[in-house]
Image (cartoon, rainbow, N blue to C red):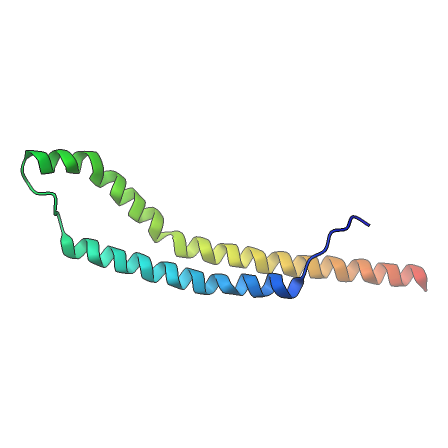
Amino acid sequence: MTGFDAELTKLNDGAGEFTGYSERAGKIVADLSGVLDSVGLCWGADEIGQSFARGHVAKADESLTELDGLPARFGGVGERFAATAKTYGQVDGGAAGSLRDVHS
C-alpha cells in the first residue's frame, strides 16, 4: 500500500464550490469595471495626467483583462477537481474489483 487516500465526497463538494467562487469573481470584476467606467479618465488631460496615462493605463487595462478571465479559471479548477474525483473513483473501483477477482 502506498498510503494514498482520497475523500471523494469532499473532493466533489470542493469542486462544486468553485461555481460560487466563479460567480462571485465575475460580480466583483463587473462591479469594478462599472466603477472604473463611471470615473472615466480621471488623471486629467494636462501634461502630468498624460504622463501618468502613458505609464499606467496600459498595465491597468492588462490587469483588468486578467481579472476578467478569473471566473473562467475558477470554473476550470472546479471542473478539474470533479474530473479527478471521477477518475480516482473509477480507478479505485477497478482496483477493488481486481482484488475481489483474485480472492475468488
